[in-house]
Image 1 (cartoon, rainbow, N blue to C red):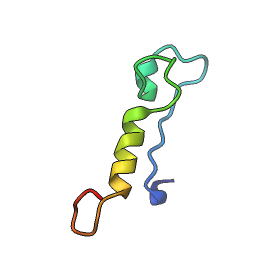
Image 2 (spheres, one colour):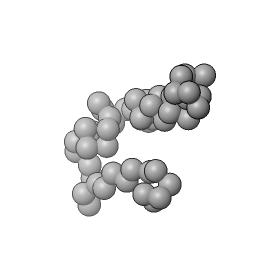
Image 3 (cartoon, helix red, strand yellow):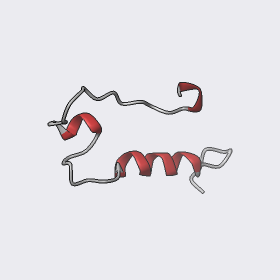
Image 4 (cartoon, rainbow, N blue to C red):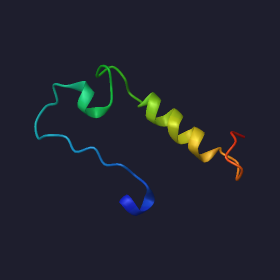
Amino acid sequence: MHDLGWTVTNQPAGIPTDPGKSHRSSFKEVTLKNIFKEAVYAINITQGGNPS
């Protein structure tokens, strides 16, 4: 996975109790907004390093 630039977040076995360990502020969050925004920004950079 690392070769693809992915970050794996290992979770302990059982029912999770801490949403922060999965990059969420609560378990009501379905998507990881901040990680998504960072990824979209990163793939939309021009060769000169400017946002497109």
